[in-house]
Length: 332
Image (cartoon, rainbow, N blue to C red; front, side, top):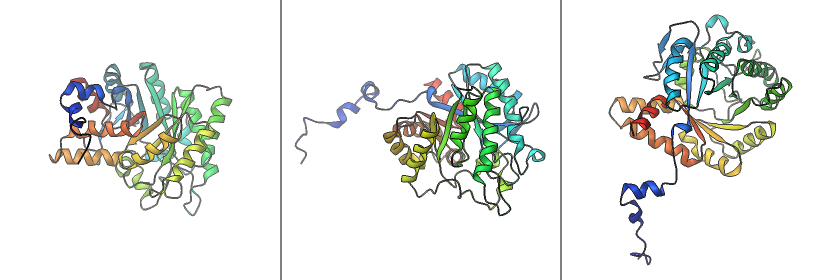
């Protein structure tokens, strides 16, 4: 028998909406959203992504008005992911640091149109390599850490020179944050921030993304397990995050999202650094597919999901659902 009853009735503070709102422990708003977008070369182009129903790749001229409307409704930041033409993929990924490349040009245009919009660029080589890997591979298909870093730091610098506010190395090479920080400092990009994918797991939830950036055909049956983290590990994430903080990361990402919120919570409680998470393509496609079959209510589930990210300790969430969430929040 509960001796505190009836003095303590937990349902009292659930009895009406106003009291539930007053005592709610976790808040969520448009300020917590980062919109990942896929960009195409050329003009007046858009392509549906079959593995991500409702999502498209856009040429930058088609993307600008879309971003403009979202920015007016409060969107703070976007993350850019390029679709690179097959003729520009190579073993050495030199297109990744082309000052006139797809990403660099997109950043310049977006910063001109929306100077107050945060622009985050992906620093990784998988869209640019013939292998589909995030780095330079040897004849045995093994990703070479230090040789890859030499390209990554050139890529990050080219993004900063184009006007990127945040460079986000997602490659998981050892030591790359320090090298990127050093080259940014050397070139006086003191305020260019590094958002490190500090704990990026070798997850099976990335499939639709690889289709979206056209790297799945290149990587085929190969694995990224020699550089991305084993999804069975927890303590290793703390070491990775600690190393990246020491090397100069300003904020970190845990990826994927929902199945890894235990990692988010652990890191948030251990380190005084902003923690983001990525609601990845596989997570998006599962919710979208279920909603299209009327197995669940899409709006309710997505908003609940965002509160779960925030409850676990995320400062912000990268999600493909950003446009829909902004519409739903605006409606509420």
